[in-house]
Image (cartoon, rainbow, N blue to C red; front, side, top):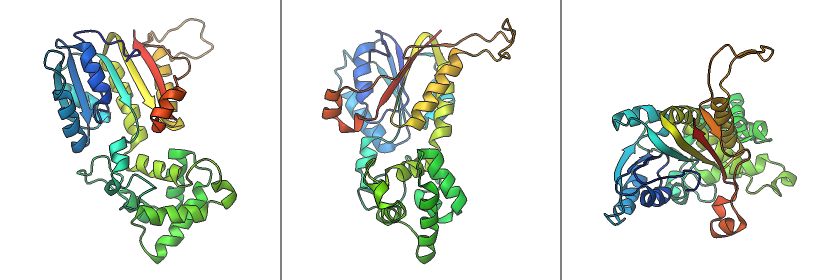
Amino acid sequence: MDGLALQPGDVFVDATLGLAGHSAAAARLIGREGLLIGIDQDDLALSRARARLEAIPEEERPEVLLLKGNFGCIDELLLQAELPGMDAVLFDLGVSSPQIDNPARGFSFKEDAPLDMRMDPGQSTPTAAEIINTANEADLARIIRANSDERWASRIASFVVKARKAAPITTSQQLVDIIKAAIPASARRAGGHPAKRTFQALRMEVNQEQQVLRAGLDAAIRWLLPGGRICAISYHSIEDRIVKETFARFADRCTCPPDLPVCACGKKPMLKVETRKPLLPTAVEVERNPRARSAKLRIACRL
């Protein structure tokens, strides 16, 4: 909330609404004269968020507009809302706790469930099971490595291809067993659950998270009014790298050759980066919410 620097009457966009934890806090800061726009592609999240926001006393509650969609399409969504611009926007990236905690969605490696992993199950996009059972070995290795930096990506892909010849891989437990067999015992003793990175990689591939994040950040920065703020919370190095590089690109837009003594392209910076290094959770925050352990917050201001 400090990073967003919200004021009464502001237009605030929560690009990753979830259960409206951030939005409920923001609503009280922008007040009755403000406008709160929440974006989420999960129908259940939208329903629960609406109930939470409607529970805020009317004298404190801003105008609320909830939009179903992916923040990668933020241009279309904000045009739909007929919005001239926004004062602040928040991205809280990755999969939400309710999605992880619902075994039927297939996000968790701790529960046996069908390998779905679509953030919007209503979309007719490929599931994790379809990718696992149809991608060739080279593509599987690339997907796992590019979305998680998993050092054993090639070996895991090889074991997956061998296993699916015997029977299709359709559940999370099947995949966990294959990953455990692929990763040497010595490597499984450190770094958390051995399936964590592969499940992350598949989820990101299913939902095209890298591409969506780049598109969403670019669009959101363009929609910010002068002095507007953007905050992004990431949970792994790939997300954080994209946020960092995007902020840096808008903070230094000059495309002239390095040896040119004077800028000739005329492109002016659009952002001022407020966090040279990302802000990390305190020990107290991690104790209260262990899932915050890997969170990194970056903040920038529109010039």
